[in-house]
Image (cartoon, rainbow, N blue to C red):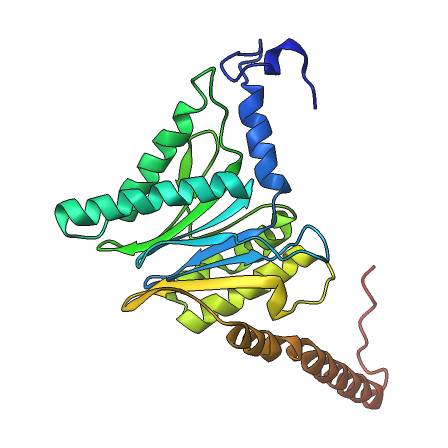
Length: 270
């Protein structure tokens, strides 16, 4: 991906007005394992794919607790994500100590974006190669933000980042209008289904994903493997039943059409 002399420094502009090192950091996010975020009026669900470097190693954590009302899922360089999650945790603790109230989610996201932006404007720094999905709950309701290595941030109803996240985005785009009124269980189910879309044919198991949830009167916590597997079992068998039912209905309709004979048969449209 070498792009001649314009990508040797983060502060060097190309003639087309691009900062290539920032773009490389954004590319690192696309190479990381997928992370999903969804929110309703009262709950936020974060999920990630557990991807190990080899069969002999364990997977790295991709979801971190910031406070009882804030969690973060990352995609990209895990080490950078760990540093930023520690910074977010420190900011939340300092705010709680000073003002004796929880830190608003939007304010924390702005501070995080400012910290990322500084790395795009200093020649002795490099951009953070990680994208963060920040989910939280405050007085104004549930929130889900995406923080980009460029220093930009956006609020979403649902979003996916990381490798093969486009399949998950397609699923979320078909379903997002119902998320605002969804229950906690429905959000968890949709998050796991979105994770399944990123696996591209690989069998979904509870060991392949991590799911966390926070909401009204429900502090941030991780779901255990048994709970995740129960959710997976509820929809893994549904497609087969629906398919069998669809075939039975098709056969019944064909029988009815056959009994009706050729009365008033319309020509088939090609």
